[in-house]
Image 1 (cartoon, rainbow, N blue to C red):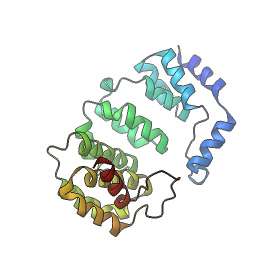
Image 2: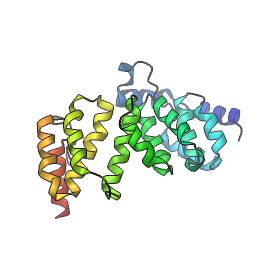
Image 3: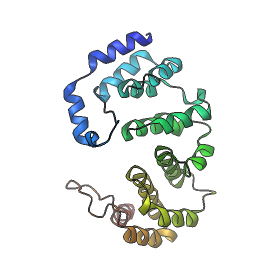
Image 4: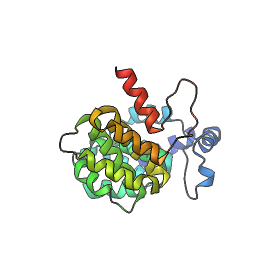
Amino acid sequence: MTLSEVLAQLESLKSGKVRDINVNVTGAKKESGTQVPSVKMGDLRVLAKQIKQDHELGLQLWDCRDIDAQLLGILLLSPKKLRAEELDSMVCSVKSTQLADWLNSYVVKLHPGKEELREGWMDSDSEMARRAGWSLTTERVIKRPEGLDLDELLTRLESSMGREVATVQWTMNYCLAEIGINFAEHRSRAIAIGEAIGLFRDYPVSKGCTSPFAPIWIAEMVRRQS
């Protein structure tokens, strides 16, 4: 499919109702310049399967700067074909956390240079790059902790998480919780940091769901593992 054909297909799938739902979920009206999808995620996945992987088309869709086109483009990209500089530019340009999460899940985590990017992103001026850097760090904590200085990570979380912007706090809190869950020797310190900072202490959760407040989250996950 050509770019114009795909854009026409996307236009036919757009729905004001879907957009309104996403506005309500994300609170995007309060965020200047933030786009929300108007196409159902399931419809985007179906369309991506029809097109199949097409890296060049994916880049063209990304350059459209329309969130529905960019979400679809992410599904068409081949991460290994992206230069590290290209991926850095993409991550830093994102305004929507939903777009950031798709980019992280389908491209960033599969990129061969993600470790070098991770280390640079954690100190980036871009909040979305810092968000991605902490997300990759959490992945390492869970899957490949060898070589990580967990004491240093906890010190960094303790000193900066409370002052970070909300978009980055979420992934930092995830990292804090996973350190506490997976490493008994660091558990009490992770819980103490969560208590002291108090992030997500009063976060509303549905019945049966676990609070993202790190001390509660850690305790519940450890209980389930025992």
